[in-house]
Image (cartoon, rainbow over all chains, first blue to last red; front, side, top):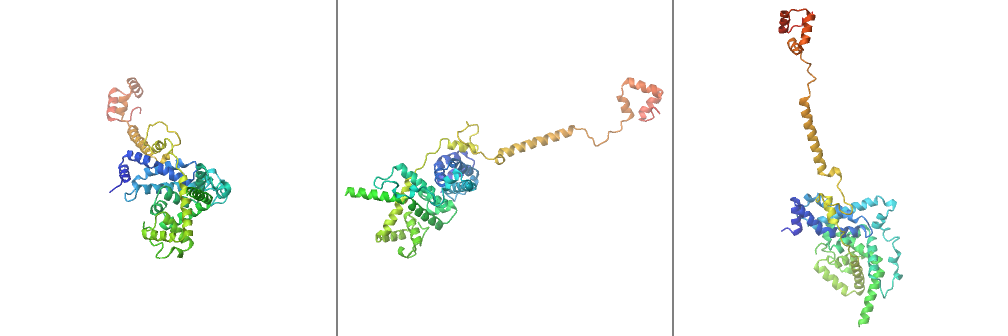
Length: 210
Length: 182
């Protein structure tokens, strides 16, 4: 039995443009969220990429086959759009435009914000303000290699199973498992001080309550 | 979850190499292990405080990602998408940039070109009927026809210069001969 999204796609394929409007309203947040976190929180072209995703959905609507989940199909289109954008930025790599550095950072940690690595940059007992934690977390994610970042975004923020991540990324489940493992290791290294402070704060609270 | 069936394959997590153990823990934290292997890992962690501490550190790192909040959808985004695919013809100019399809990709462009071509072909056929033929040489006008078209005063002049009596002239006209003036 077709789910609600598949019914929308059938209507769109039959020429009902109002179905496309419903699809856009339903999945705009998802597509923007994926593009934003994959291309980097500082990248200014996220909305353009998201727009291209929906244009592509409309143009390729007859290519959709009902055996696939609409969301998975949409993810695959969004991933391809982001990859095309990255390829475009990579072509300008030597010019070090701000868009490139926003997406790729300065490599795998090299030259990254030293505050991320410095355990003395905040008070272990008081912890950081919420915004500062968010900034550091965003920066750590932005610095991940793009494939690890994509796997992380799909798994953590979009709650995709390994199988769904593999389909969206056109890869295998073992490859997804490897990417997520390495993403965790990289994040753990970059955010170790934050996590240590968080653990210490929790321990202090526990002692205070006992 | 069965996508990673057999990660342990009967082995103890201590028997795995460092990378295999990390991948196993990652799948455990993502709830991607089969139930029996997840139970095995839980028991192993209960018996290994150091491993449990490490797993807890990894889990808290992942939880920090909850601080990476999403941003609201920009105003007018959907309308710009609809305009880009042509679903809102005649709508007010939306704010922000609209990604337009290239002109050669739009079906309207090719429809317009086909219409212009059809009109041009139609005009060509219409003009062809009105154009006098230039390939066939003008038929030799008979003397009768020529004489019929000649004004009266010219006929009188011809009469004078040929010095033909009327009867002879009429005969010549009827025969369509070319002896006039000879």
